Length: 474
Image (cartoon, rainbow, N blue to C red):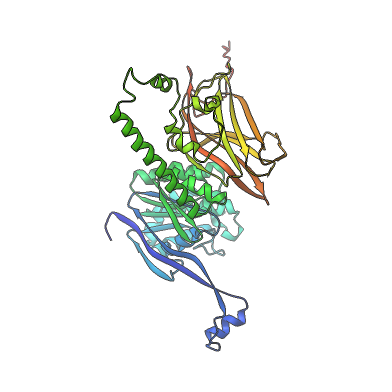
C-alpha cells in the first residue's frame, strides 16, 4: 500500500447468521443437522474505498446502512467475513459509548487502561494526563466509577482520551451528538487542528452540515453497500434522495439522463457558435434577452424535460430567470413544479434582492395524481451547499387539503430579506407524507442563484437588525 494511503478497504463483506432459535445455533455448531438453519444478513457487501493521509472523510447513510460496522472492522473490533483492510498509522477511535471502558474503574483508571491498550507507557500517559482532564472538564468526577457518569460526561472523557494520545488516524462514530453544544464546538475545533497537522479523520455523522463543512470527501452507504463517494455536497444530495425513497438504480438512471441532456446542449451550443447564429448584431434580440436574465429554450431543456406546460411559454415566470444548467431534480412524479419565480417588492421578476426589502417566492405545481395535503417548500443555501434558512407550508400552517389530479396550485412565500449581502442558491419542492413517510413528488435542487445586495454586512449569514443606542455615563 502506498504511503499516501492511510486506510484501504477492499471488497469487505460482513455476513451475520440469524437463527430463529438458540437450539438451531447449537445443533449447527455440533454438526447435528445438515439443514441450513440460519438466514444470511449482509451488514456489508463488497465495500471498497480509500482514505488518503491528511484527509477528513465522512460516512453517511440511513440507519442500518453499515456505517458503524465498517468503522468497527477498521478499528479491529470486528473481523470481516471476506475482504481486506490495510491501515497505515496509529488509530484512535471513539465508537459507541462504553467501547474500551471498564464501568467499574474510575475515569482516571480508564484513561490509563485506554492508553495502555493503545501502546503507551505509564510515563507517556502521565505526561498527557493533564491535557486529557482539562479537555474533558468533568471536575472531580474523574475519581468516580464511570458507571456513575451521564452520557455527556462519558463522551467528554472518551473523546478527550481519543484525541490527546497523538493519533495519526482519528475515527469517530456518532458519539459526538451526545455532548452539549459547547463541547461539540470544542471537538470540531480540534478537528480543524488535526486537519492542519495533516492527520487523517474518518467519522460518521447524521449532521450533514458538519459533513459538508469539515470533510474533504464523503462516502454514502446504503444497505451495506458503498453506493457513492465524492464531493460532500454531491453525496449529501444523493443521501437526501435515498431518504425520500429513491433507489440507487433510479438515481443512476436520473444521472444518466441528466448527462445526456447536458451533452446534447453542449453539442448544440457549439453548433450554434460555429454557424454564427448568435453573432453580435445578428441575434434577433437574443443577446439582449440574455442580458436581461432570460435564457434560450435549449438551456432550459433539462428543466422542461417531459413537461407539458402549454403552447405560450412566454407566460412562464421562469422564462425570465437564469436556471442552473446542472439542475438536480428528482421525485416520484405525482406532482410537477411547472413554473416558479422570484418577485421584488414592486412585483418585478428578479434574482437580485436588496437586503431589508420584501420579496416573494412563488411556485406553480400541477398534480398528476391525487395528493393529500401537499407541502410546498423552499430553502436557501450557501454556494458551498450549507442550508441557511427556509420554510414550508406545513411549518407555516397553510394546509391545502386534498389536491386532486389535474389541479394546479400556486404557493407564495412573502418575507423580508435579512440575509447578508452575497450569493446564495435556492431550492424548492413539493412533498407530502404517505403512510407516515415523507415522499418527494418533485424537488429542484439549487435551481436558482440569488444575489443579495447590501450596504451593511454584519457577522454570519443573518442580520438581526439591531437597534443600537450609546449613552455616556457621567
